[in-house]
Each structure stands twice: as structure tokens, then as C-alpha cells.
Length: 83
Image (tube, rainbow, N blue to C red; front, side):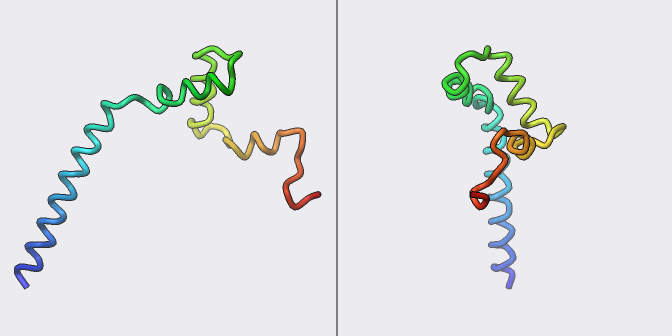
């Protein structure tokens, strides 16, 4: 029984250390905005970097309804089931 608990404790310790190492390394990587910027420039070539950043911040801020608000305000309000 002691071996089982020792094995579980070792597994939890290894998983905890691995998670903390992964989290520390993730902060050093490029931010989401920096990774997404080249694709956003392709989709919105007329916008500046600042305008794209504002758009991303608006979508991720939680102050608005996000995607559902954009879809409800579209000109074509029908969905696939409403022919």
C-alpha cells in the first residue's frame, strides 16, 4: 500500500514540476497577437497594426458579446436552417 501512495505522490510531484516548467517557458514565447499579426494583415490589408491590436483586444476583453454580437449585426441574419 505504501508503494502505491509513494508512486502517486511521485507522479503528482513530477506533473507539478512539469507544469510549472511549461508555464515558465510559455511566457517567453511570442504573444498571441504577434503570432496572429501576419494572418490578420492578410485578412485586413487596409488596417494598421494598432487598429488590428485594438480589434483583437475588443474581441478578447469580455466587455462586448464577441462573436455572437458580430453575427447578430450582420446584414444576412438568416442561418443555415432558414432558407
